[in-house]
Image (tube, rainbow, N blue to C red; front, side, top):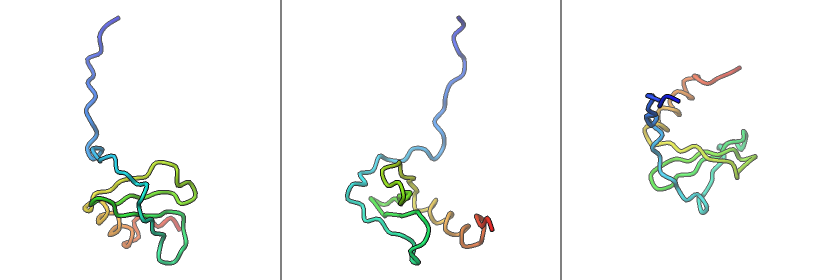
Length: 80
């Protein structure tokens, strides 16, 4: 069988650290609606599904979080 010549390169932005979230102070939205929570841990922002807190969390850099919040405020993710 021929040896593969395809080399996997790491995806840009996927070099986030493995953070210890066991003592994170999770916050819900200010209105208490929705089902995501965020926590600020070691200079990063973690986001999780509050209905399934044991599932993996998304990790954002401050720049990524700022871009996300800015676009959300501008209605970029409004599905209504």
